[in-house]
Image 1 (cartoon, helix red, strand yellow):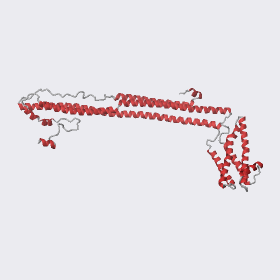
Image 2 (image 1 turned 90 degrees about the vertical axis):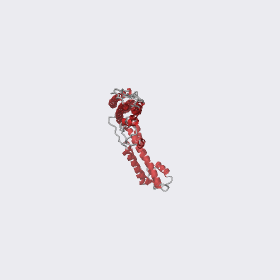
Image 3 (image 1 turned 180 degrees about the vertical axis):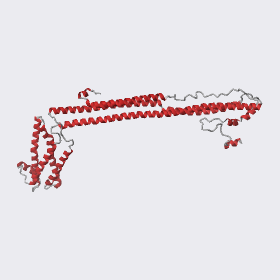
Image 4 (image 1 turned 30 degrees about the vertical axis):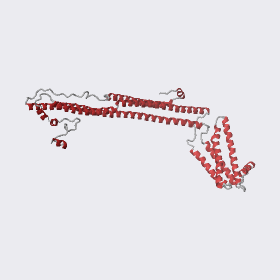
Length: 470
Protein backbone atom coordinates (compact mmCIF):
# COMPACT_ATOMS: atom_id res chain seq x y z
CA UNK A 1 0.00 0.00 0.00
CA UNK A 2 2.79 2.40 0.91
CA UNK A 3 4.55 1.52 -2.34
CA UNK A 4 1.42 2.31 -4.36
CA UNK A 5 0.88 5.57 -2.55
CA UNK A 6 4.42 6.70 -3.38
CA UNK A 7 3.95 5.80 -7.04
CA UNK A 8 0.48 7.31 -7.46
CA UNK A 9 1.22 10.36 -5.36
CA UNK A 10 -1.95 10.21 -3.29
CA UNK A 11 -2.66 13.52 -1.49
CA UNK A 12 -2.67 11.85 1.89
CA UNK A 13 1.06 11.12 1.59
CA UNK A 14 3.18 14.03 0.18
CA UNK A 15 6.42 13.20 -1.66
CA UNK A 16 8.64 15.37 0.59
CA UNK A 17 8.89 16.69 4.11
CA UNK A 18 7.78 20.27 3.32
CA UNK A 19 4.49 22.06 3.55
CA UNK A 20 3.60 23.44 0.07
CA UNK A 21 3.55 27.25 0.08
CA UNK A 22 4.88 30.35 -1.74
CA UNK A 23 7.54 31.04 0.87
CA UNK A 24 11.17 31.23 -0.19
CA UNK A 25 12.12 28.56 2.36
CA UNK A 26 9.47 25.86 2.74
CA UNK A 27 8.61 24.83 6.28
CA UNK A 28 9.02 21.24 7.41
CA UNK A 29 5.94 19.13 7.93
CA UNK A 30 6.80 17.38 11.22
CA UNK A 31 3.84 15.04 10.95
CA UNK A 32 5.06 13.81 7.58
CA UNK A 33 8.56 13.31 8.98
CA UNK A 34 7.17 11.37 11.93
CA UNK A 35 5.39 9.02 9.56
CA UNK A 36 8.29 8.75 7.12
CA UNK A 37 10.79 7.92 9.88
CA UNK A 38 8.17 5.73 11.65
CA UNK A 39 9.14 7.37 14.93
CA UNK A 40 6.38 5.71 16.92
CA UNK A 41 7.33 2.20 15.77
CA UNK A 42 11.04 2.87 16.16
CA UNK A 43 10.45 4.25 19.65
CA UNK A 44 8.71 0.98 20.59
CA UNK A 45 11.63 -1.06 19.27
CA UNK A 46 14.17 1.05 21.19
CA UNK A 47 12.12 1.43 24.37
CA UNK A 48 14.77 -0.31 26.45
CA UNK A 49 17.47 2.11 25.27
CA UNK A 50 17.72 5.03 27.61
CA UNK A 51 19.09 8.36 26.38
CA UNK A 52 19.89 9.37 22.80
CA UNK A 53 20.20 6.65 20.18
CA UNK A 54 20.71 6.44 16.44
CA UNK A 55 17.18 7.70 15.76
CA UNK A 56 18.04 10.93 17.51
CA UNK A 57 20.97 11.25 15.15
CA UNK A 58 18.71 10.44 12.21
CA UNK A 59 16.27 13.19 13.22
CA UNK A 60 19.13 15.66 13.57
CA UNK A 61 20.44 14.50 10.18
CA UNK A 62 17.10 15.33 8.57
CA UNK A 63 17.21 18.82 10.07
CA UNK A 64 20.85 19.35 9.10
CA UNK A 65 20.09 18.25 5.54
CA UNK A 66 17.19 20.72 5.38
CA UNK A 67 19.50 23.41 6.75
CA UNK A 68 22.15 22.65 4.12
CA UNK A 69 19.65 22.86 1.26
CA UNK A 70 18.18 26.09 2.63
CA UNK A 71 21.62 27.60 3.05
CA UNK A 72 22.56 26.71 -0.53
CA UNK A 73 19.42 28.41 -1.78
CA UNK A 74 20.01 31.37 0.51
CA UNK A 75 23.64 31.74 -0.63
CA UNK A 76 22.68 31.49 -4.30
CA UNK A 77 19.95 34.14 -4.07
CA UNK A 78 22.06 36.43 -1.89
CA UNK A 79 24.93 36.15 -4.37
CA UNK A 80 22.52 37.13 -7.15
CA UNK A 81 21.44 40.19 -5.16
CA UNK A 82 25.07 41.15 -4.54
CA UNK A 83 25.90 40.74 -8.21
CA UNK A 84 22.97 42.97 -9.14
CA UNK A 85 24.17 45.60 -6.68
CA UNK A 86 27.69 45.32 -8.07
CA UNK A 87 26.36 45.67 -11.64
CA UNK A 88 24.93 49.08 -10.73
CA UNK A 89 28.56 50.23 -10.48
CA UNK A 90 27.83 53.35 -8.45
CA UNK A 91 31.45 54.25 -7.86
CA UNK A 92 32.41 53.90 -11.54
CA UNK A 93 29.26 55.69 -12.69
CA UNK A 94 29.85 58.57 -10.30
CA UNK A 95 33.42 58.99 -11.52
CA UNK A 96 32.24 58.90 -15.13
CA UNK A 97 29.58 61.54 -14.46
CA UNK A 98 32.02 63.90 -12.75
CA UNK A 99 34.59 63.37 -15.52
CA UNK A 100 31.94 64.04 -18.17
CA UNK A 101 30.82 67.21 -16.40
CA UNK A 102 34.42 68.38 -16.10
CA UNK A 103 35.01 67.69 -19.79
CA UNK A 104 31.79 69.47 -20.77
CA UNK A 105 32.79 72.52 -18.74
CA UNK A 106 36.26 72.49 -20.25
CA UNK A 107 34.84 72.26 -23.77
CA UNK A 108 32.50 75.11 -22.96
CA UNK A 109 35.39 77.33 -21.82
CA UNK A 110 37.35 76.36 -24.94
CA UNK A 111 34.37 77.29 -27.11
CA UNK A 112 34.19 80.66 -25.34
CA UNK A 113 37.88 81.36 -25.98
CA UNK A 114 37.63 80.24 -29.59
CA UNK A 115 34.56 82.39 -30.18
CA UNK A 116 36.22 85.40 -28.57
CA UNK A 117 39.29 85.00 -30.77
CA UNK A 118 37.08 84.75 -33.85
CA UNK A 119 35.11 87.86 -32.89
CA UNK A 120 38.27 89.83 -32.15
CA UNK A 121 39.66 88.95 -35.56
CA UNK A 122 36.42 90.01 -37.26
CA UNK A 123 36.28 93.13 -35.13
CA UNK A 124 39.83 93.96 -36.18
CA UNK A 125 38.74 93.69 -39.81
CA UNK A 126 35.85 96.06 -39.10
CA UNK A 127 38.09 98.56 -37.30
CA UNK A 128 40.73 98.47 -40.03
CA UNK A 129 38.18 98.90 -42.81
CA UNK A 130 36.57 101.80 -40.94
CA UNK A 131 39.95 103.40 -40.37
CA UNK A 132 40.86 102.93 -44.01
CA UNK A 133 37.55 104.38 -45.20
CA UNK A 134 37.82 107.36 -42.86
CA UNK A 135 41.36 108.06 -43.97
CA UNK A 136 40.26 107.79 -47.61
CA UNK A 137 37.47 110.30 -47.00
CA UNK A 138 39.82 112.80 -45.39
CA UNK A 139 42.48 112.45 -48.05
CA UNK A 140 39.92 112.91 -50.83
CA UNK A 141 37.76 115.46 -48.97
CA UNK A 142 34.63 113.39 -49.12
CA UNK A 143 31.93 114.47 -46.68
CA UNK A 144 29.11 112.39 -48.13
CA UNK A 145 28.21 108.75 -47.91
CA UNK A 146 29.00 106.46 -50.81
CA UNK A 147 26.28 106.01 -53.42
CA UNK A 148 26.11 102.82 -55.41
CA UNK A 149 23.46 100.26 -56.29
CA UNK A 150 22.92 97.68 -53.59
CA UNK A 151 22.42 95.17 -56.38
CA UNK A 152 23.81 95.32 -59.91
CA UNK A 153 21.32 92.83 -61.28
CA UNK A 154 19.23 95.51 -63.01
CA UNK A 155 22.27 97.15 -64.61
CA UNK A 156 23.66 93.86 -65.84
CA UNK A 157 20.21 93.12 -67.18
CA UNK A 158 20.31 96.37 -69.17
CA UNK A 159 23.70 95.40 -70.62
CA UNK A 160 22.40 91.97 -71.62
CA UNK A 161 19.28 93.49 -73.19
CA UNK A 162 21.37 95.99 -75.20
CA UNK A 163 23.65 93.21 -76.49
CA UNK A 164 20.70 91.04 -77.51
CA UNK A 165 18.84 93.88 -79.25
CA UNK A 166 21.94 95.05 -81.12
CA UNK A 167 22.75 91.47 -82.10
CA UNK A 168 19.25 90.89 -83.42
CA UNK A 169 19.18 94.10 -85.49
CA UNK A 170 22.75 93.79 -86.77
CA UNK A 171 22.18 90.12 -87.53
CA UNK A 172 19.30 90.92 -89.88
CA UNK A 173 21.42 93.49 -91.76
CA UNK A 174 24.63 91.46 -91.91
CA UNK A 175 22.83 88.25 -92.94
CA UNK A 176 21.78 89.77 -96.29
CA UNK A 177 25.14 89.35 -97.92
CA UNK A 178 26.86 86.85 -95.60
CA UNK A 179 27.93 83.58 -97.15
CA UNK A 180 26.60 81.64 -94.13
CA UNK A 181 23.27 83.42 -94.20
CA UNK A 182 21.43 84.29 -90.99
CA UNK A 183 23.63 82.11 -88.77
CA UNK A 184 26.84 83.77 -89.97
CA UNK A 185 25.29 87.23 -89.74
CA UNK A 186 24.07 86.60 -86.20
CA UNK A 187 27.46 85.32 -84.99
CA UNK A 188 29.28 88.33 -86.42
CA UNK A 189 26.59 90.66 -85.05
CA UNK A 190 27.03 89.15 -81.57
CA UNK A 191 30.80 89.67 -81.72
CA UNK A 192 30.37 93.28 -82.88
CA UNK A 193 27.75 93.96 -80.17
CA UNK A 194 29.94 92.56 -77.41
CA UNK A 195 32.90 94.68 -78.50
CA UNK A 196 30.78 97.79 -78.96
CA UNK A 197 28.84 97.45 -75.69
CA UNK A 198 31.91 96.16 -73.83
CA UNK A 199 33.86 99.30 -74.72
CA UNK A 200 31.04 101.48 -73.42
CA UNK A 201 30.74 99.47 -70.19
CA UNK A 202 34.48 99.38 -69.52
CA UNK A 203 35.14 103.08 -70.17
CA UNK A 204 32.03 104.16 -68.28
CA UNK A 205 32.76 101.94 -65.24
CA UNK A 206 36.55 101.99 -65.00
CA UNK A 207 37.81 105.04 -66.94
CA UNK A 208 35.31 107.94 -67.04
CA UNK A 209 34.92 107.88 -63.22
CA UNK A 210 38.61 108.68 -62.88
CA UNK A 211 37.79 112.23 -63.96
CA UNK A 212 36.11 112.75 -60.56
CA UNK A 213 39.35 112.04 -58.69
CA UNK A 214 41.06 114.88 -56.84
CA UNK A 215 44.47 113.79 -58.04
CA UNK A 216 45.31 115.73 -61.22
CA UNK A 217 47.23 112.88 -62.79
CA UNK A 218 44.44 110.38 -62.26
CA UNK A 219 41.89 112.94 -63.46
CA UNK A 220 43.93 113.43 -66.64
CA UNK A 221 44.07 109.68 -67.26
CA UNK A 222 40.31 109.55 -66.95
CA UNK A 223 39.85 112.45 -69.33
CA UNK A 224 42.21 111.04 -71.95
CA UNK A 225 40.60 107.64 -71.68
CA UNK A 226 37.13 109.06 -72.09
CA UNK A 227 38.27 111.10 -75.09
CA UNK A 228 39.74 107.97 -76.59
CA UNK A 229 36.43 106.19 -76.09
CA UNK A 230 34.52 109.08 -77.71
CA UNK A 231 36.77 108.77 -80.74
CA UNK A 232 36.87 104.98 -80.85
CA UNK A 233 33.16 104.26 -80.76
CA UNK A 234 32.21 106.26 -83.92
CA UNK A 235 35.22 104.84 -85.73
CA UNK A 236 34.24 101.30 -84.82
CA UNK A 237 30.64 101.78 -85.87
CA UNK A 238 31.68 103.51 -89.15
CA UNK A 239 33.83 100.47 -89.90
CA UNK A 240 30.81 98.22 -89.22
CA UNK A 241 28.67 100.40 -91.55
CA UNK A 242 31.25 100.12 -94.36
CA UNK A 243 31.37 96.37 -93.73
CA UNK A 244 27.60 96.17 -94.21
CA UNK A 245 27.84 98.07 -97.49
CA UNK A 246 30.57 95.70 -98.68
CA UNK A 247 28.49 92.63 -97.80
CA UNK A 248 25.49 93.87 -99.79
CA UNK A 249 27.58 94.72 -102.85
CA UNK A 250 28.04 92.61 -105.94
CA UNK A 251 31.06 90.73 -104.53
CA UNK A 252 30.51 89.81 -100.84
CA UNK A 253 33.81 87.93 -100.80
CA UNK A 254 36.56 90.00 -99.18
CA UNK A 255 34.01 92.39 -97.66
CA UNK A 256 36.10 92.95 -94.57
CA UNK A 257 39.22 94.05 -96.44
CA UNK A 258 37.23 96.35 -98.75
CA UNK A 259 35.39 97.86 -95.77
CA UNK A 260 38.70 98.68 -94.05
CA UNK A 261 40.12 100.38 -97.20
CA UNK A 262 36.88 102.32 -97.70
CA UNK A 263 36.80 103.49 -94.09
CA UNK A 264 40.39 104.73 -94.29
CA UNK A 265 39.93 106.41 -97.68
CA UNK A 266 36.52 108.00 -97.09
CA UNK A 267 35.20 107.49 -93.51
CA UNK A 268 31.91 109.22 -94.21
CA UNK A 269 31.37 107.54 -97.56
CA UNK A 270 28.76 105.10 -96.30
CA UNK A 271 26.39 104.49 -99.18
CA UNK A 272 23.15 103.05 -97.79
CA UNK A 273 20.67 104.47 -95.32
CA UNK A 274 20.53 101.10 -93.56
CA UNK A 275 24.27 101.28 -92.91
CA UNK A 276 23.94 104.77 -91.45
CA UNK A 277 21.14 103.44 -89.28
CA UNK A 278 23.47 100.62 -88.17
CA UNK A 279 26.11 103.24 -87.34
CA UNK A 280 23.71 105.34 -85.23
CA UNK A 281 22.34 102.27 -83.53
CA UNK A 282 25.80 101.08 -82.50
CA UNK A 283 26.77 104.51 -81.10
CA UNK A 284 23.56 104.71 -79.09
CA UNK A 285 23.94 101.22 -77.66
CA UNK A 286 27.56 101.86 -76.69
CA UNK A 287 26.53 105.13 -75.05
CA UNK A 288 23.82 103.33 -73.08
CA UNK A 289 26.43 100.84 -71.86
CA UNK A 290 28.76 103.76 -71.01
CA UNK A 291 26.13 105.47 -68.85
CA UNK A 292 25.12 102.17 -67.28
CA UNK A 293 28.78 101.45 -66.47
CA UNK A 294 29.15 104.82 -64.73
CA UNK A 295 26.25 103.88 -62.47
CA UNK A 296 27.80 100.55 -61.47
CA UNK A 297 29.59 102.18 -58.56
CA UNK A 298 30.04 105.45 -56.70
CA UNK A 299 31.16 108.32 -58.90
CA UNK A 300 34.39 108.67 -56.94
CA UNK A 301 36.90 105.91 -57.73
CA UNK A 302 37.42 103.26 -54.99
CA UNK A 303 34.95 104.96 -52.63
CA UNK A 304 32.20 102.44 -53.24
CA UNK A 305 34.56 99.46 -52.98
CA UNK A 306 35.92 100.63 -49.62
CA UNK A 307 32.44 101.31 -48.29
CA UNK A 308 31.24 97.88 -49.41
CA UNK A 309 34.25 96.24 -47.78
CA UNK A 310 33.47 97.97 -44.51
CA UNK A 311 29.80 96.96 -44.76
CA UNK A 312 30.80 93.38 -45.57
CA UNK A 313 33.12 93.22 -42.56
CA UNK A 314 30.40 94.61 -40.30
CA UNK A 315 27.87 92.13 -41.66
CA UNK A 316 30.31 89.23 -41.17
CA UNK A 317 31.02 90.36 -37.64
CA UNK A 318 27.36 90.75 -36.67
CA UNK A 319 26.36 87.48 -38.30
CA UNK A 320 29.22 85.53 -36.76
CA UNK A 321 28.54 87.04 -33.33
CA UNK A 322 24.93 85.86 -33.47
CA UNK A 323 26.05 82.41 -34.61
CA UNK A 324 28.65 82.14 -31.86
CA UNK A 325 26.22 83.28 -29.18
CA UNK A 326 23.64 80.80 -30.41
CA UNK A 327 26.21 77.97 -30.49
CA UNK A 328 27.39 78.91 -27.02
CA UNK A 329 23.85 78.74 -25.69
CA UNK A 330 23.36 75.39 -27.39
CA UNK A 331 26.58 73.98 -25.92
CA UNK A 332 25.57 75.18 -22.46
CA UNK A 333 22.07 73.70 -22.76
CA UNK A 334 23.45 70.38 -24.02
CA UNK A 335 25.85 70.22 -21.07
CA UNK A 336 23.04 71.02 -18.63
CA UNK A 337 20.77 68.39 -20.21
CA UNK A 338 23.58 65.86 -19.98
CA UNK A 339 24.07 66.59 -16.28
CA UNK A 340 20.32 66.47 -15.67
CA UNK A 341 20.20 63.10 -17.42
CA UNK A 342 23.06 61.87 -15.24
CA UNK A 343 21.15 62.89 -12.11
CA UNK A 344 18.04 61.04 -13.30
CA UNK A 345 20.14 57.98 -14.09
CA UNK A 346 21.65 58.00 -10.60
CA UNK A 347 18.20 58.41 -9.06
CA UNK A 348 16.93 55.44 -11.07
CA UNK A 349 19.96 53.35 -10.10
CA UNK A 350 19.51 54.25 -6.46
CA UNK A 351 15.84 53.24 -6.59
CA UNK A 352 16.87 49.87 -8.03
CA UNK A 353 19.57 49.61 -5.37
CA UNK A 354 17.07 50.21 -2.55
CA UNK A 355 14.72 47.61 -4.02
CA UNK A 356 17.51 45.03 -4.25
CA UNK A 357 18.70 45.89 -0.75
CA UNK A 358 15.20 45.48 0.67
CA UNK A 359 14.81 42.15 -1.11
CA UNK A 360 18.17 40.98 0.22
CA UNK A 361 17.22 41.99 3.76
CA UNK A 362 13.93 40.15 3.40
CA UNK A 363 15.88 37.11 2.25
CA UNK A 364 18.17 37.27 5.29
CA UNK A 365 15.21 37.73 7.61
CA UNK A 366 13.39 34.80 6.02
CA UNK A 367 16.47 32.60 6.33
CA UNK A 368 16.92 33.51 9.99
CA UNK A 369 13.27 32.65 10.65
CA UNK A 370 13.71 29.40 8.75
CA UNK A 371 16.70 28.44 10.90
CA UNK A 372 14.60 29.04 14.00
CA UNK A 373 11.85 26.95 12.43
CA UNK A 374 14.29 24.08 11.74
CA UNK A 375 15.57 24.22 15.32
CA UNK A 376 12.03 24.20 16.68
CA UNK A 377 11.06 21.33 14.35
CA UNK A 378 14.07 19.32 15.48
CA UNK A 379 13.23 19.76 19.14
CA UNK A 380 9.59 18.92 18.44
CA UNK A 381 10.59 15.68 16.69
CA UNK A 382 13.13 14.75 19.37
CA UNK A 383 10.63 15.44 22.12
CA UNK A 384 8.01 13.32 20.37
CA UNK A 385 10.43 10.43 19.85
CA UNK A 386 11.61 10.48 23.49
CA UNK A 387 8.06 10.69 24.74
CA UNK A 388 7.09 7.67 22.66
CA UNK A 389 10.10 5.71 24.00
CA UNK A 390 9.18 6.50 27.57
CA UNK A 391 5.56 5.54 26.96
CA UNK A 392 6.60 2.23 25.41
CA UNK A 393 9.00 1.44 28.29
CA UNK A 394 6.56 2.58 30.97
CA UNK A 395 8.97 5.23 32.17
CA UNK A 396 7.91 8.55 33.51
CA UNK A 397 8.17 11.43 31.03
CA UNK A 398 11.42 13.37 31.05
CA UNK A 399 11.26 16.90 32.36
CA UNK A 400 13.85 19.60 31.85
CA UNK A 401 15.61 17.80 29.02
CA UNK A 402 18.11 20.11 27.27
CA UNK A 403 16.95 21.62 24.00
CA UNK A 404 18.88 20.80 20.87
CA UNK A 405 20.52 23.86 19.33
CA UNK A 406 20.92 24.23 15.56
CA UNK A 407 24.36 25.47 14.66
CA UNK A 408 24.06 28.49 12.37
CA UNK A 409 26.27 28.70 9.24
CA UNK A 410 29.31 30.87 9.75
CA UNK A 411 29.04 34.44 8.42
CA UNK A 412 25.62 33.68 6.96
CA UNK A 413 24.58 37.30 7.50
CA UNK A 414 27.76 38.78 5.98
CA UNK A 415 28.06 40.02 2.40
CA UNK A 416 29.34 37.73 -0.28
CA UNK A 417 31.86 38.78 -2.90
CA UNK A 418 31.88 42.54 -3.60
CA UNK A 419 32.37 44.82 -0.64
CA UNK A 420 29.19 46.49 0.54
CA UNK A 421 28.72 49.85 -1.17
CA UNK A 422 27.11 52.88 0.36
CA UNK A 423 26.04 55.00 -2.62
CA UNK A 424 24.16 57.67 -0.66
CA UNK A 425 27.30 59.63 0.15
CA UNK A 426 28.75 59.29 -3.35
CA UNK A 427 25.46 60.28 -4.98
CA UNK A 428 25.19 63.32 -2.70
CA UNK A 429 28.74 64.28 -3.66
CA UNK A 430 27.98 63.89 -7.36
CA UNK A 431 24.81 65.98 -7.10
CA UNK A 432 26.72 68.68 -5.26
CA UNK A 433 29.46 68.77 -7.90
CA UNK A 434 26.93 68.75 -10.75
CA UNK A 435 25.16 71.67 -9.12
CA UNK A 436 28.48 73.51 -8.93
CA UNK A 437 29.26 72.78 -12.59
CA UNK A 438 25.77 73.96 -13.53
CA UNK A 439 26.36 77.20 -11.66
CA UNK A 440 29.71 77.63 -13.40
CA UNK A 441 28.16 77.05 -16.82
CA UNK A 442 25.53 79.72 -16.22
CA UNK A 443 28.08 82.17 -14.82
CA UNK A 444 30.58 81.53 -17.64
CA UNK A 445 27.83 81.92 -20.23
CA UNK A 446 26.75 85.30 -18.83
CA UNK A 447 30.38 86.45 -18.68
CA UNK A 448 30.99 85.27 -22.25
CA UNK A 449 27.94 87.14 -23.55
CA UNK A 450 29.19 90.34 -21.92
CA UNK A 451 32.68 89.81 -23.35
CA UNK A 452 31.30 89.07 -26.81
CA UNK A 453 29.33 92.29 -26.74
CA UNK A 454 32.25 94.29 -25.39
CA UNK A 455 34.36 93.23 -28.36
CA UNK A 456 32.45 95.89 -30.32
CA UNK A 457 34.10 98.57 -28.18
CA UNK A 458 37.64 97.42 -28.82
CA UNK A 459 39.90 99.81 -30.64
CA UNK A 460 42.65 98.83 -33.05
CA UNK A 461 45.24 99.43 -30.32
CA UNK A 462 43.31 97.22 -27.88
CA UNK A 463 43.18 94.46 -30.44
CA UNK A 464 46.86 94.81 -31.23
CA UNK A 465 47.73 94.66 -27.51
CA UNK A 466 45.47 91.66 -26.95
CA UNK A 467 43.30 93.52 -24.45
CA UNK A 468 39.71 92.55 -23.74
CA UNK A 469 37.37 94.86 -21.91
CA UNK A 470 35.06 93.19 -19.38
